[in-house]
Length: 257
Image (cartoon, rainbow, N blue to C red; front, top):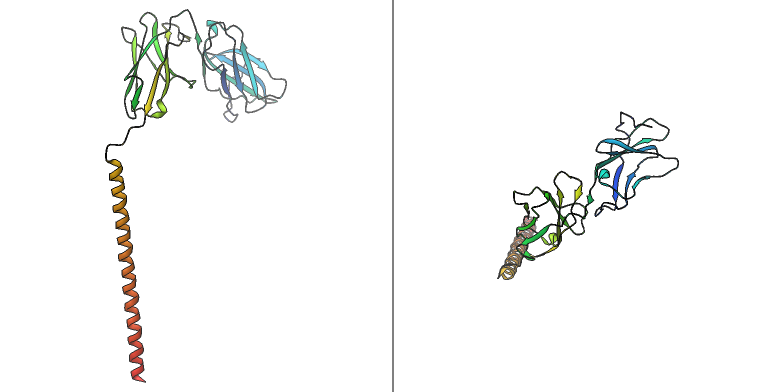
């Protein structure tokens, strides 16, 4: 069954995920999962915008899997999925795209360096250089613990790129690696290269900052106490004056009787 030409925007969008999410090499097994927010009759998987695979859903399930055994270069690319609602002609819009990039271990890994090296203070600009002049067409910067690449850049004439992390914070601490995608093979990748480790330490306060802070606190307390004292004296003066007027009125009243 071919997919419907018109999608109804009221049908919830599916989502597509890749398993494993990264580090898939040529020849590995890989699965694309289309997550369905509604009960579906048909699910379609598209590669590069072209209908490639279809599945009929004959039981209640919220996920449909498309598995590739021994993934090949022809199966690398950008995927989307779509579904038709059960017992209806309503068709969802496409999911967000997911890239299947396959690692070709025949390509040598790139080189990497870090400037300044290893330990820096908060707010420092850090440069990570990657190079491999023989194969690189687009370099990708990875951080361990994150599935998505940090940055992607095209190298200069000597096959090198410089990734800059501006004003780093302790959240930028971690291990970084590079890979590259060979020229004319957008969805093939080199293996990850060597690691560099970045440690970002909180910037120390300037000498005397703690004393200044304490001094400011003392001044604020003194000012607050002085304001409270003045306010209290003002209230006392008003009360005292009012008492004086009351006694005077009573005294005058007594004389008139």
